[in-house]
Length: 211
Image (cartoon, rainbow, N blue to C red; front, side):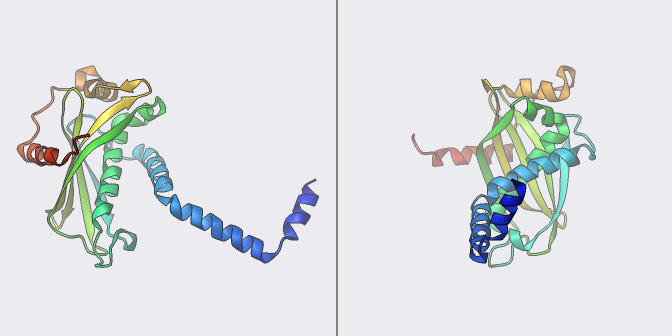
């Protein structure tokens, strides 16, 4: 049976293999964002076990990166949308180092409700930068996370997002999520949301569509 299949495959014309390769490349290209996210989570899960853990809800994490050609627009600096993708990675890094990997296996996830970005300085091709990420505050529904893209010790981009924890049966309160990650005795009361973050999020509300 195997010999028959091998004989059939080797007898196919070269144009068949070229068409198959083209189709495969086209499918991968159209779905590259999905596979990028899958590989990102897998990489962070593996790497998280080798990095210092996040032991408090208010710990700050750092990721060090260099701007690659795939991050850039034709002006050869990081394109606006790329900051959102990398901020996703920074938030995953924070949560996974806090122990969220076990939560993923139980069906927990977080859904971003709002992201506000302030662009201040660009990041040109090959420039080194650091993303500093921390949990700012939480309430009965949302967790508020800040990411700062730092260039030469100064803020290049300031990004604030609010995310809703979700489980297999629906919404999970932020307090329950944090207690699952850090233990009930290790979760302090939420600090007040900083004024600059509150203003960023508040100013986005009038932009919401009525439906």
